[in-house]
Amino acid sequence: MANTNILGLTLTLTPAALTALRIAPLIGSTASLTHAYMEWLVTTSFLSPAPIHSATSRFVLGLNALPSPPAVSGQKPNPEEVSQTYAELEHAMQVVVPHWFTTFFNTALYSVVGFNTFTLVSASLNLLVSSSQSGGEESMRFYGIGLVAAATHYAFVPLVGWSVKALIGLCAGRIQGSGEAGREKKAVEWMREWVGWHRIRMATVDTIAWACFAWGVIEALTV
Image 1: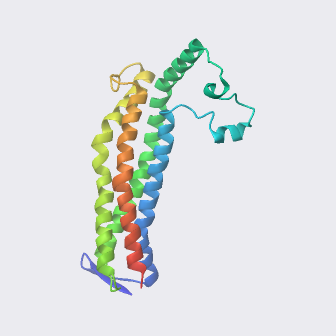
Image 2 (image 1 turned 120 degrees about the vertical axis):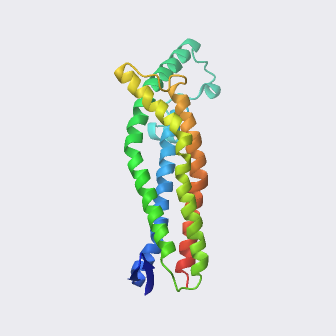
Image 3 (image 1 turned 45 degrees about the horizontal axis):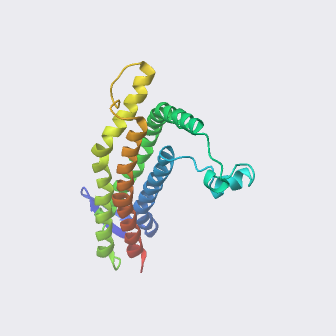
């Protein structure tokens, strides 16, 4: 049993409840990091050409379904056709990206905030609950660092805010026929800016939070 005093109330946690509390921040940070990775995976698909000649694409479509790349087959593509294709793709991206991102942001925001809130609350509760297990102080040090890293996730809000506002502004402007937000750059450029900050956030504070909670759980549950 573990006893703790919160706001003048003495709480007693069973071993099972204490274990669940110790694991909770790791679950939350794992969900957040996985969510961030999937965001990166999806958004970067708008920033690079479709890999139609990759091994995966050729396996799915069959070995003879696609012609070999020009460099291999020796065939030279028609420059006018290539130019027209890229122009069509660029125009399509300018239309699709703001609409897609606006829908994506309005739905993903709730899960991101939810996972991070769960992580922050459960980590804070762990720091409030005293543990008599060996290695308790060491594990709480990692929980504390993880809590700070998870909270720092929100420090990136101003950094991604410009691109978010611009992309939503482009979407609203196209639908309503008005609005100037985001017009100084193309939609793909705004998306690339958002992905850049998102990649830094995911690789730093999100990963650090997950690693600290993982090690904290190992320390806390190792007898």
